[in-house]
Image (spheres, rainbow, N blue to C red):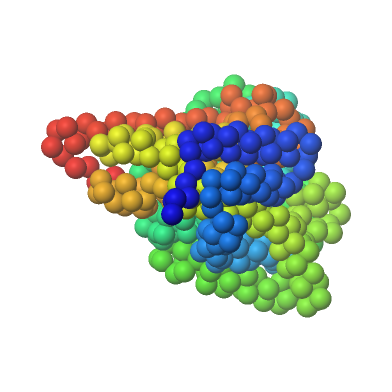
Length: 460
């Protein structure tokens, strides 16, 4: 009996077709879910002609999707948690104290610091930009700062959410795919995060010195006064996000941590902010909408709840289903097996991982494929060369994950332009953190290679 198999030509054909499906979705402003569905159907059509049965292909797809079922629950919980943290006054408190901190400082520098801290607690880069980012962008425009420059700064801070926030759906997808923990991965990520963060902050401090903030700060004061009028604000509210972060760092399972953060937020909303049970249930499912005297503040205090995350779940499931078929049918191995097998050093492995993850993010216009496919295919090679899964997670997050907003046709860049009204071409040169991370990854790879040649095994 002839063994079912595909060819390298099939792999390239499926890759090009998938790109066309996903690109068409972006061009016609249709959900990426349909792009992945079309890609899966095309892949099935090609492979059935090569002898694969429909049942076998269905099992390949469902097996991969089922393996990641916990991440779908987590994504939905994250949607609910963001809404509850707004209703509980936690996010308003962070905004209040953050704006208080920004008064009288180098605006670009403080905007980067404030956005990056807020991003870790909000848990989504796009969510940070569409809330805190919009507020900072509005203030910056009033101060006469070019919007492209300021948006680049905001994006650099916001995309730390996708990289290190414990409530980030993308980071948790990365951890789940690589089968590693938040605590271990965060420790490894710090080896590239710290130099990149301080270098980026230094660049923004230097650039920010060129802009003299002479306008008054009435807008800041208005935000703060409105927040105090509508919410009970206390530094104690900051203990909720800090507690979630601490629980993640000490190694508590993410599902338990997020659930605890959600339940705590519900009690705070009910007890301190006097929200009704019905309003809380609505916020969890359909999202929270601010009802303050400031329309600008209301546009910041807005989230979509669990319902808004359903599309994210379907996109992730589509990416996982497609990658599972490509992996289990052997097609993807035909394309990159030579790349993997020819890798002899740790440095080469890190470099090639970063390249493949970045290419997949660029080609598929979404970060999920850049996480899932290299995450699954490179794990064994990392073990062979004595590198841990957390190094693989860091490499992917430093490259394929972080470059998304600086690819003009990527779904992230398109959403950012839609939200802010600023073209990608205007802000891309100033989103410096998204450039520095991949460069540092190359330097890390070189260090590993040189260390091996010198007979030293650096602890990366």
